[in-house]
Length: 449
Image (cartoon, rainbow, N blue to C red):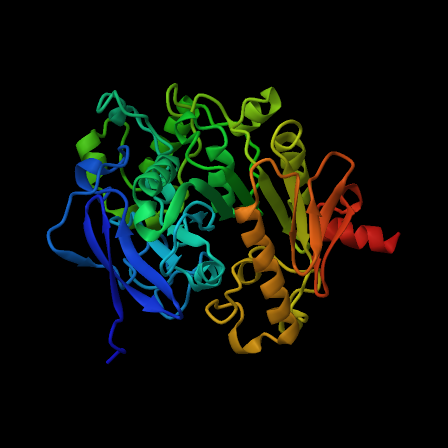
């Protein structure tokens, strides 16, 4: 039997939650922020949580959103998920300091190519953040074709609601939930940083241009997710969805009710359907893409921290995002993560790969499947420093143009032609950003020259 739960109760809008005290912090798992997006709620804007009676246990994770997984339940997919999943998946994990008052908040959106992953994975454990006074809210959002889907049969239903972009609608619903409920956990709804890696970084980038998200966050972190792409025209997305449906025997005359009768696992199992058909414009909800908003200087102007890992492509896009986000008003901070753990040296010959930074930015080595006993003293020391820098950014005072972290390092804002923070085994240092290549292939070319 597991150890007894050291329970703690918190009242939110929908009722009372019972979480647990663990490692000196409070943890609430499986916290609903919207009604289950099933049945009539599939492909609709997030609906309110129905209030519950009594005390609801929040001590165990609910299943991740539906996605393809290995038939061997001991093997995780590329998003880190194995075992059971469910279409009923709009839940949060909240890790908070005990007796917090006015604590800043980090809202985390997981990676996974928009059709994999879960907010409950060990790499995203918020214990180290909470021990430094920051609340972490880690999010499940809809995935794949259940998240990014438009179809003519759905157009006539709920005409007053936005169509498509359901993962982004979930993200806004989370921020509204945080605004309304985070004070119960000791959080400050005026100090909210949105953050994500890979697909989660793409969620954050899109939040920068959503009218409904404006005012719900005051900083943004984008890790390996600078997806500065135009939106896909709705007609193109509808055509792609109809063509993909034909591969599972669904014709163009399908009704909305028939679409909703298709099982979530069918969408996850179908390669043409599983990734969805994102992102699409909507006149009210998504009137512009973020790249267009940035170029016009009309994005939500908040401090942005953005970067990538040395062993992956994407630094050029991160540099572009930093330049556009930090051109006027709030500053942008650019980084490249260069540390390869000793136990990965044989595998990562070109530097740390996609997702390698996560157990450092969260200081979650012992909870992440990437680290644990294989990590050495250098890994642990760097994780402490890097996590401290992420926490320092979350706590950064309004109007600041730089911030200090990692035992005296000053992280300076980026301007075109300026510097990025290099995160190396020995610590952090500023280095000319234009001299850093986009990825490992260019790195090798530069070394050969």
